[in-house]
Image 1 (cartoon, rainbow, N blue to C red):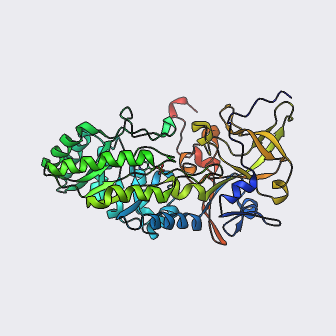
Image 2 (image 1 turned 180 degrees about the vertical axis):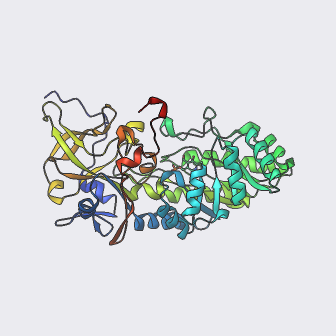
Length: 444
Ligand SMILES: Cc1ncc(COP(=O)(O)O)c(C=O)c1O
């Protein structure tokens, strides 16, 4: 048989193993795959596929779990809006006591629309525009994380002109390798993020003398999908050293924003050990007398979301290569194409889930080879019309969608226990070109 060897050496977890690692998802003989208390096929029947489904109860439970792990530190969570920016998600986080970490005017406005208090918003990002800075100051958000000496001058000038004083933290680049995918590592010296560690002292001194800004502390973020606590420990130790030197130089340092980056298990692995993470925060910062902030995105919402899809075409054989072409594509969920990311795939029907397995490629309909969700995946045999859930799509899923191939953005459904509601409609094709026009000079 000429089937090439699987790309990854790790065996694919079975459906049972995937579900055992995700207690919010269960398989029932009649109802099939159930998220919290709602059968996903019921949602697929009503809203169609492809569609995103998020579990509010799951997000809430994860927020509470992380807050509980951090008990005994004075850390406050600021949910990283970029992971999933739906206003209902932001509202859920705010109700759960989390602030928001935003990186654009749009995210800032969304956070406010979702009910996050301005005071609980932190603005991070390497290239904030003057317009965004003016908005942040006008809204009186809690803190701007400054990424460069040049940005500090701009914030000072704008805040002074508005007669305001903005609290700022300097985002330092601790030059630590987070051991994650090259496209999502952010804390090494050759990344574009933050102020070089060696320059931080001078920039902090400059901030202390500039009008319109009040330096309150330091911020760092070393990357995303981090599964080991060692890089955090290393980065936090360097940050704590800097806090001590700044204080020795007479500066006030009252806050440290520890960033996000906690990874999740995309297979049947447990993800980042949050107790150990909290332990690192506690060990480094408890004796330092600083207010700690933590900015997780993926860990809070990733496992809570699924992307529902249907097999549009099944082609090929196991002897050649068997492809299942589904109705979702890389424009909907880009992570496999962009980061070679692994996402578990589970049939919605219990009968499908119990079928004998075969080796398949799960691909989308877009004419690019990268439109591939899984290659050489061991899955129960699925026929045309079978529906599946692509797991762990709650973070960096819908937020990274495009409309490539004039494919409308997908509907979003929020499940909460046994209730569910459509929280975003499927985009209409006409909406995609609603703002476009043919110039008059083309003639009639
Ligand atoms: C400054 C900052 N904070 C928080 C996050 C959230 O990261 P994650 O979703 O990995 O927790 C990011 C993501 O890149 C970020 O850039």
